[in-house]
Length: 304
Image (cartoon, rainbow, N blue to C red; front, side):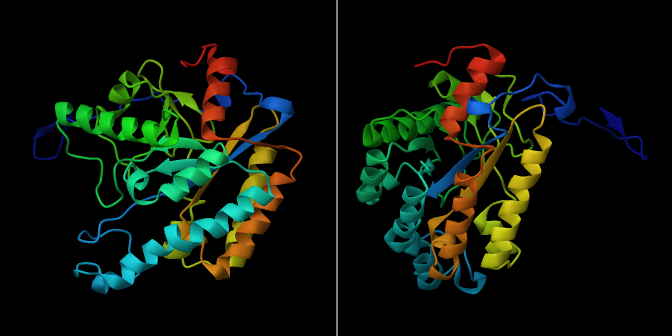
């Protein structure tokens, strides 16, 4: 509790999901093959509703029905952009870690099939990115999470092990409820360059990024393709330098309707080539990173 100048007492909520742990005071992480950096692509595959505002390139029309301008921009990703992106992933031998809205299974089955044939990792990413995962009572959240997880498992043949909420949203109960459903990690807390254990038995936080994220790079910051490539290589080079005593994780967050635009494609391809050919990089999925950390650092055997 704190007391302000007027003498009013206010109770402050502290974050009890995880403990403070400076990166200089941890057990070392050793990635396979002596790699310094574990690199994964977090590929956001999402479904949007026509009658709800969502990620927009122009705000002026975002509340209209229909909002052809913004809906069409987002829809480009699943119709065109993702197929261009898949070509680059295949070229460089990178398996995506797919942050999947469960509604994608119904609307874009060809994407599910493309990912199954490439052995992508599938993470639960809510039902739709037209709604945040927030303001849910416990019973309603259990039902919501159960349906999302089971829908993804049925469509992909793989029960998701990871979670990232739409716009990185959770409730205070989400990690515990996910653990009850057999999930092992969340990506929502973008506060580290290494995985770490949450104060929920069996649950980890695995690094994700709002910095090396195409939505922020191109949408919020207004950077260009060359800017993106420079940012990518600088980011990786710094993590390699940091990882002399303990491995780091590098996530690249991609949205097909952003990075899949023709003018940006060659810069993504060059970035993936840089990572794929780097001698200090382990090309991984977020599932593999979580499993390795559980086994080699925490000494636990991941649940099947």
